[in-house]
Image (cartoon, rainbow, N blue to C red; front, side, top):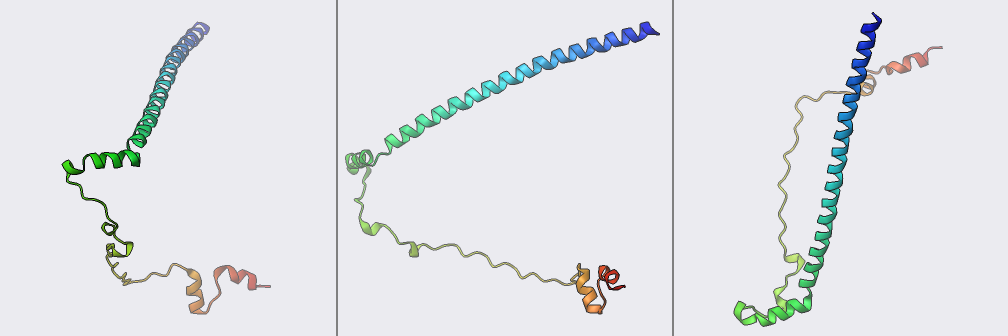
Length: 132
């Protein structure tokens, strides 16, 4: 009987060791994957910062004004005048659709307090308080 117990204990120990070994390597793999993803995110943020800087550089008003003047004739641009801008009171906003009226055919009373008051009786908890 002891021999069987020793064999089962050794098999359980061997199985738990194998399981721990696999979990250790899975954990290492997941940690490596997480570090790789964090590095990719950092690289993407750095690229985004560069792209934003380039966008800001290319959208400088003096550069755009210069480009507009250079390409005025080929693009058939019209000079900007103050009357080309509108006022906010000229903007037509969409009118929201009217909500249908809510019709309640069979109302259900869920409060026992209003029913007790309508019947002229005290609420259930008040009966015990009225007794001497």
